Length: 351
Image (cartoon, rainbow, N blue to C red; front, side, top):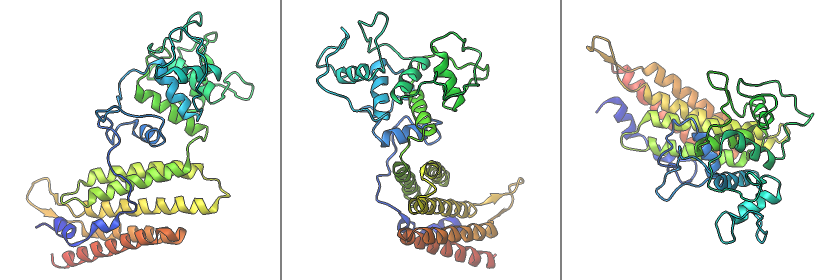
């Protein structure tokens, strides 16, 4: 048995689990490395988006007007109203999107298509239309004197109806131009693209929930521990999960007010736990073999293992001091860090 497997077998990694949160993947078609993972994960957790019965999100499926309005209302926390009469001929009572569309119309978010007699719920949505609906739902008027919109793109003519919405999105980094300095306002929007625009708008408008972000971060840490607890853990997967956790925790950190010391310390403590976990993974990575170019020798970087465990122990100690409720998890991390370091020192001395 190599030293890596020996250390894994001697230590109880299962004791590290921070929370009993469900650690299943969000959707079958959204991998950890997906650029939209953070946005989709948050919006799934907060109930804005749901997947399909087969477990997929429908990442590349083009979103239609009814679907777009539904998720926009949910993201803006606008409750759908019942009992409203539809002014659109193609939105009859009893259809699933009736209350969504009538609410959207009552709120001034949508006004119909063409002459206004139809909503055309099944028509696909492009980026410009989506941004207009999204900003109306969030009560953002890009034409207001409150905003100075200096950023523009090659495909945003001054007199186009969509230009203010697209320029606002550029100004506040809700979207970016492509390599040709275009925003592609007429491009059909996928579900993944819609999720990203919603998340970016909520982030820039500080509409994200710190508690939800903290919970999601902890979920990913728990999933990382589940991976480490496997007989043959995939350290790369565990590392990505911790990186995602840190991403969500950083968003939570942005949202907590400077005057809210209690919640600040809770988030800081979780960040320290994520740093400690990251260094634990690094220590285990350094226990893997490193073969020379000639392929004739192999060695273990025990000094790096010991250094990583020291950092892990120190981060866990900081977490304990910031939030007493993290002490149990922090102590387990410290015990594991010490055990890995002791085994590394023992193996180093016997080389």
